[in-house]
Image (cartoon, rainbow, N blue to C red; front, side):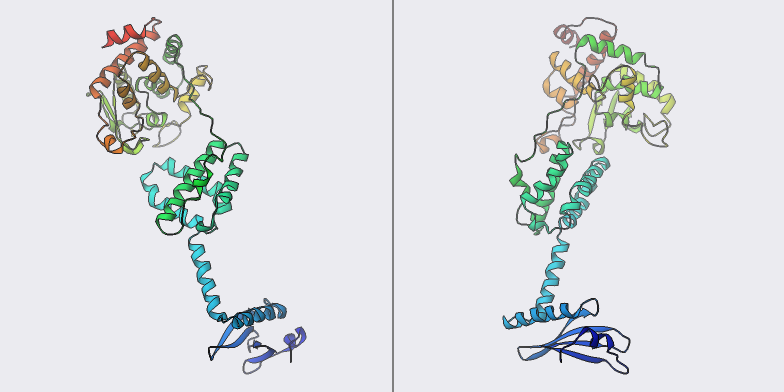
Amino acid sequence: MALTATSIKNARAVDKPLKLFDGGGLYLLVNPNGSRWWRFKYRYLGKEKLLSFGTYPDISLKDARDRRDEARKQLAAGIDPGEHRKAMKTTLAFRGENSFEIVAREWFAKYSPNWAAGHSDKIIRRLERDIFPWLGGRPIAEITAPDLLATLRRIESRGAIETAHRAQQNCSQVFRYAVATGRAERDSTADLRGALTPVKERHHASITDPKRVGELMRAIDGYRGSFITKCALRLAPLVFVRPGELRKAEWVEFDLDGAEWRIPAARMKAREQHIVPLAKQAVAILQDLHALTGDKQHVFPGVRTNGRAMSENTVNAALRRLGYAKDEMTGHGFRSMASTLLNEQGWHRDAIERQLAHAERNNVRAAYNFAEHLPERRKMMQAWADYLDKLALGAKVLPGRFKKVAG
């Protein structure tokens, strides 16, 4: 006799479990403790087997019957319902273990120890904010180029074009790692070439006109803010390193007697040690500053932070205080200033590029190149400092004549 909601509700088991049969192998097992379990009894290849469909009332009578009917269809097709369920669980577990987020975090854990802290933080935040919420739970092997493009379009829609491109690059790295580890067949991002809005090339604001450079040098000399900030402003054009490399400078990296600053590979963008020859003007600034911060780790310690370097906004804020807008001059702009004028003065291009620490395309060559052109770079850095002094005094220095005199 088929079960009803009433018969199920009124059923009680006192001393031992009670079986209420519904037909077709389905029955409800009522236990003395009050629990009610749906069971499906069937035979496969002559062997009696039992399959659980869950508990009542979580699984209603209708749901239990639907599951029984589906199981009977599988039996008719020669499929063991119990083994089929196990296979499905295994497949779902495999898909979960190989979701985009799982693979991405595995990739990140493997490679991030070799990255700068700031770089790795940006990558994981980008993935967590812009990719994981939409693709993180999907099996990586099933993510198509249109799936990925739809997610990247969300980033584009808020005007973050460069971030969208960087996110695509990170996803490509994750896909390639998945291919290498057997979790995907190919990198789906390869089909997105040209699909994103192109990134407009941006240049850091910089002053390259010699007359205006002289005005800037005089403005820096007249800066009336923090002495530490003033020293950073004065040193920036003399060494033209990246702003982060300057503000995080540590005293142990300097050999003032040898007029040399060796920035460790861990703090360089190209991940190789960088030598900065120091002109006598740069040495004088550092010697003066050493009296104030020489007992600390950082050359330019932060004002309000204990044991940390000055803020990344300090130099730019000082330039604003001097009256230079962000579209006129930036801390990074000292690099463009030096590159433009040193090239105009005829210095060896490779020496300039090496001093700017631009990444070497040939990694093998780069391993032996950190000291390349060092003798000429020493002459160039001193000549450059002398040139800035002359501009600060208002002198008109012709590039060709200056190079000839300096050489």
